[in-house]
Image 1 (cartoon, rainbow, N blue to C red):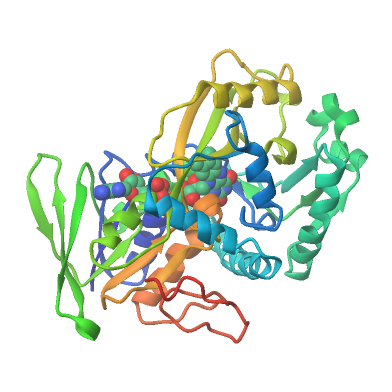
Image 2 (cartoon, protein in one colour):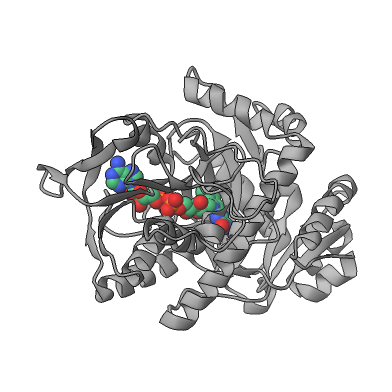
Length: 438
Ligand SMILES: Cc1cc2nc3c(=O)[nH]c(=O)nc-3n(C[C@H](O)[C@H](O)[C@H](O)COP(=O)(O)OP(=O)(O)OC[C@H]3O[C@@H](n4cnc5c(N)ncnc54)[C@H](O)[C@@H]3O)c2cc1C
């Protein structure tokens, strides 16, 4: 079968790899000149199965209200006269109940665990070098209340099979001695030895290279403008995709099946053909610093709860990422938010890095209100979704690609996840929030 994958971030590239492995003829289309140039470019680097709590949780509404209007707030909602943003915001609030949060955590853990295993298998098979570290993720807290509030989530993770173990402040320092300078402020933490970190951009580039060598075609600098449909009702199909190619020429690309993997930009395209995806961009920032003193920089991937930052060592670089601005599709860098990241990193690891020459970057997380992605079928027979991975697209990317390739090949993936437009595999009681809309 000929399949066109729209988007060459981590999810699109992983989709292409697994489709090719399943014997399909695959073309990947992206508007950028190479793979992983947008949200999969410089993210936090964490493969964090154990930190699957979505932002929509019982404490979120209060925190968002508290942070409204604060330029350097970890999560900043800027109200816009935009129907999608308001609809998304209302659904986000609806997902904050304890019951929905627990359901969403179960879903995210299921796909994230499947994905981590898939990543490990791909790594072993391909030998892709991406500054991978398998030293776990250490979450540390500097606020007693936040630490105590995190205990039920850690307990739930353990019940779901993630070894997210609560540790005291001394143990935090034993696991990551580079945190010694703030020892007095740390009140506790939790550590998951099975979590990982690595450079998503390097990995995606490596996977694309090996996919191309195996027969996948990549068409870059090509912007997708429209999906064309034929038939109606149950027989409705996508007949082609209209693009503007690298020479500015309009073309229609035809295939037997199409996979939408365009991150935050999937929603406007899908809407044209009546597929309403509740995906809104959540702008996040990262700063990358050159490490100057190896022993003073962390080598375990960290989550700084108080500042909502994640920190990953990528070879001789330190990547610090986080914060979220719900404010449309802009990727402008706000100096206040950039400086807040450097201030905090310098406080944590005073002499570890060259803080005078940071590389700042912003990317748009394709957020669903629940942080559960859309993976599966749509009302159009040959249009498939692999999009809306929000805060965890690197964690869930490889598994999502493998799962959608299975679905396109006519098989049910072997995991308990509510695939869009499909019945759940086992009777897990998972509320299928995202099926009806697609
Ligand atoms: C600051 C930050 C930190 C993060 N940290 C982590 C982390 O530690 N761990 C984790 O698991 N996740 C993290 N994430 C989330 C993760 O990076 C994303 O979920 C993931 O990169 C999304 O991948 P994607 O392939 O769906 O989207 P993208 O990487 O954005 O890919 C979409 C592709 O579609 C293309 N495209 C879009 N529109 C068109 C069009 N019209 N025509 C042609 N091509 C088009 C784009 O060029 C792009 O290449 C973080 C995100 C941010 C912003």
